[in-house]
Length: 318
Image 1 (cartoon, rainbow, N blue to C red):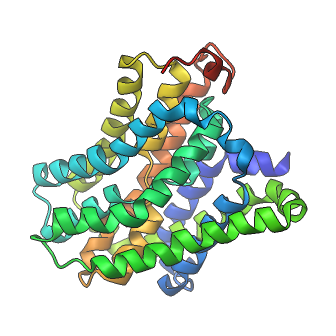
Image 2 (image 1 turned 90 degrees about the vertical axis):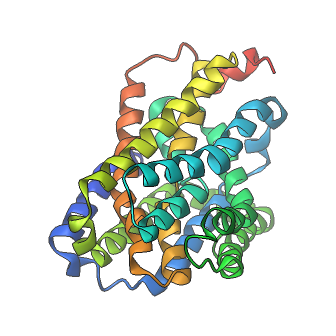
């Protein structure tokens, strides 16, 4: 119960860490960005450990929302980021940073947000896993395609880092689940707490390393990043609804589409882009993304979806 209460307040912890990092950066500067890939790998390992065959039960009936989320994640969101960057007259470095943020996989905190919002958590897990694996190839491909003429892109380096930080840890988690299932099941209640703690330190260190740039960032950049999430969530909600989807399906897709792994985008910016300003959008979004997601989850928590999460699948019509 203590762990559950701690996790339900994740937005407060992220906001507090971000505020502390902005006011007193040295609080988190001891955590070097060099350790971020290891910490992100730990988060991805937790995805593998907590994902079992039961989570994929009925997956064929979720094909429509899975496809909608996948296409929106890697088509709509990068295009939206590019359009918003052009609209605010962003520098080429910040334009690259916004496209980088939009081209990575969905954030792991989306699963917790879906739980708070009364959305479908198993479907959310499937969506996170699908975009995580899809991003291994599509993230470097999108960056090379969209940014190749704007800024130098180390696409092979990004692919290598994505495999190291995402694919290997997830596969290790899946193997651990298969080899020592009892141990993994015993660890499962503590995984969300560990994930939140890792996120707090990664976000804090990310914000602290860019605190002067975040505080000096234009108001337009902050607005553009907030609009990025609002418009993404709106499209993610409306398209499934227009196709006849249930409210729970729409909520799940909206959360998954609008939430991106800003910490992972920051890691890629640090490792593979020479210009410091490329990492600023991801650093700023480490603040806005969890706050927006938490507000969305809290709002939907007060609105009945008409069915228990998961029960809508019985009424699903492809």
